[in-house]
Image 1 (spheres, helix red, strand yellow):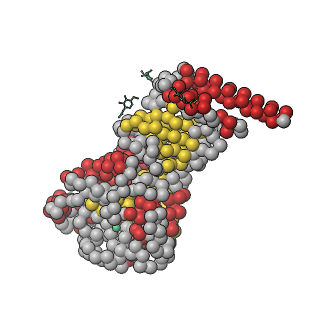
Image 2 (cartoon, protein in one colour):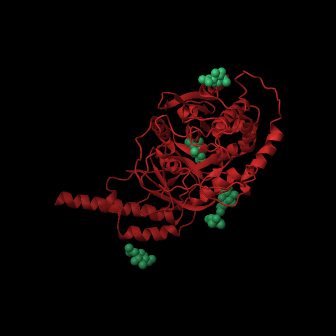
Image 3 (cartoon, helix red, strand yellow):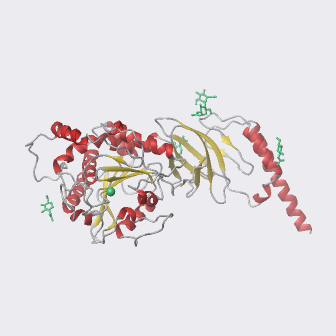
Length: 457
Ligand SMILES: *[C@@H]1O[C@H](CO)[C@@H](O)[C@H](O)[C@H]1NC(C)=O
Ligand SMILES: *[C@@H]1O[C@H](CO)[C@@H](O)[C@H](O)[C@H]1NC(C)=O
Ligand SMILES: *[C@@H]1O[C@H](CO)[C@@H](O)[C@H](O)[C@H]1NC(C)=O
Ligand SMILES: *[C@@H]1O[C@H](CO)[C@@H](O)[C@H](O)[C@H]1NC(C)=O
Ligand SMILES: CC(=O)N[C@H]1CO[C@H](CO)[C@@H](O)[C@@H]1O
Ligand SMILES: [Zn+2]
């Protein structure tokens, strides 16, 4: 699938920057509670310590966390995910799913530590900082600090550039291990990859990001992530209609980062730093440099695009309804609660909603800046004779209906020949609906006639 990542080249002066950060935030000789697990220390944590931290967080904040494993590594280590949200444990209708995944390359460790610090920051500020409380109440956040715990074990602190520890214990680059429709599978699917793929299929993630040590890669679109992950780090540019949203996502992250936006070239990945496995004293400056950006990035699920529910006429949620935007290749589907999300930059779009056995709906939507547009849409079942409805009249009806008055909303419906439209918002009752009714009658009567004729014959 088309995917695109942006790369912002950081200035070669980044080292100077980090040294500056270091002086600011990491005073030498600072005493820290040496063995206490919480609060999370800005340091490197081995796999045991990582698990202990996650357990400690889950135990300290049981109302907003759940610790679970998505599977095991090649050597049998659990791949731990900390879920952070109010009432954790399952998808809640209308609450978006978000995930950060780090340490896919075992030797790229910054993201791994950033996620531990982020987890602690979120949990410990729930009920203290309004913004964090709101984020946790309204978002289901999943953090996988290490996708490659085996690789981590063979990597080495201070090793900025080598590939030692990059692969899993079976010698496979997990980043190249996801199925790719373009060039097929290069390696047998690894247990880590399989675990992440089934995770992705299990939860309807709206937005995700991979933190590659020193690098954050924006993933989009939201499902079929394997294809995105596959291309991570490759400087292949896929031009797609969704370029605009990539640019926006990349900008949101980079603008919230103290130096990143000073780069001038949007390409594929966001470079956050210079070293894959920096000495522990650099973790703190990394955290301060990225904290706001990590939070802003999660906010995107609430502030961009469209979201809402698809119901049937009895207001039961419809699972698996497809939503297509203009001619963008990316389709999204409603989850079993009938909810959906689609990130889009502000502007006007035509969206098409379809589901087998239901009539399609096409409508115009205006996406505003700062707040996602909420759409609740009701689909009606096709009549069993509906196939008779297609014909000349329908073609011209489309024309007529397109000229009809718009509903008083940020969008108006475009009624197509065989669409019967019911929106849960106020819909203007003008020519459009009269014509539509007429059309339905016409179709019904013709069906009746054909039925009668066939009985006579
Ligand atoms: C992991 O880290 C903890 C805490 O720093 C330490 O006590 C333990 O010995 C380490 N385990 C291994 C296998 O190095
Ligand atoms: C979207 O459409 C509205 C009218 O429906 C118009 O006022 C507005 O300028 C359009 N916005 C863009 C970005 O085209
Ligand atoms: C859409 O439907 C959901 C679920 O029933 C409801 O909570 C929400 O208030 C509705 N929003 C609008 C704008 O109708
Ligand atoms: C529909 O109406 C237009 C004029 O508005 C006409 O040119 C066109 O041929 C008609 N289409 C059909 C399928 O009858
Ligand atoms: C064109 C029109 O009627 N716009 C109205 C739509 O409804 C909002 C309130 O929901 C009014 O503020 C607009 O004037
Ligand atoms: Zn990497």
